[in-house]
Each structure stands twice: as structure tokens, then as C-alpha cells.
Image (cartoon, rainbow, N blue to C red; front, top):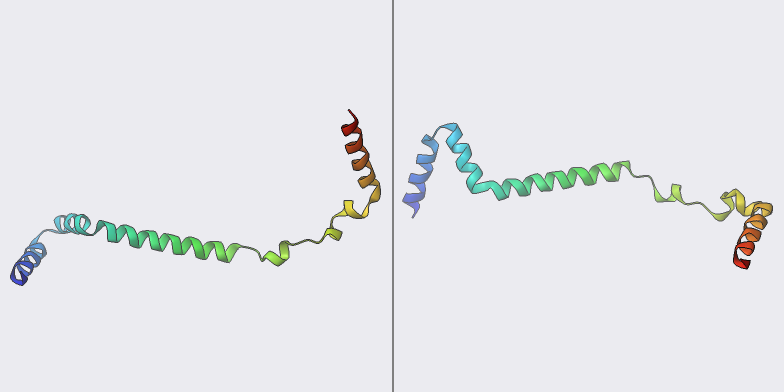
Amino acid sequence: MDSQAGEAREMTKQLPFKKRLINFRFYNKWIVAGVILVIFTTALTIYEVSNVQSHDSQKRSVTHFPFMTDFSVVRILYSFKKSQSLR
């Protein structure tokens, strides 16, 4: 078996570059596809992690919203809701 593998390897080395490339693609296409997928996923993950804002900076407490401190707006909304329910 080893002599046959050695002969096949020698035969492959003697092929022109285009034929060697076709041979490589035929036998290793899933490995190459897996490596490309891993590289793409890793690059996308690094990009997403480096461009995301901190979750703490996106949190807002209730007091930051102006309508919670302005009771006139709350009254208007409440009266609108109450008038809608009477119909």
C-alpha cells in the first residue's frame, strides 16, 4: 500500500499545475470549504464584537424620558385612552 501511495504522489507531482489544482480541489474541497467558513465566521464575530456598544450605555432609567415627569402629557394620554374606551 505504501508503494502505491508513493507512486501516486510521484505521479501527481509530475502533472501540470492546472491538473494538480483540479486534483487538489477534487480531494480536499470540503476541507477548504470548512476553513473558509471558519475564517469567515471568526472575522464576522470579531467585527461584531468590536463594533457593538456597551449595553450599559444603552440603558435608560424611567426618569430620562420627559413624558414621565410632565404630568400634563400623561393626563392627555390618559384622557385619550379613557375617551377611546367609552366609544
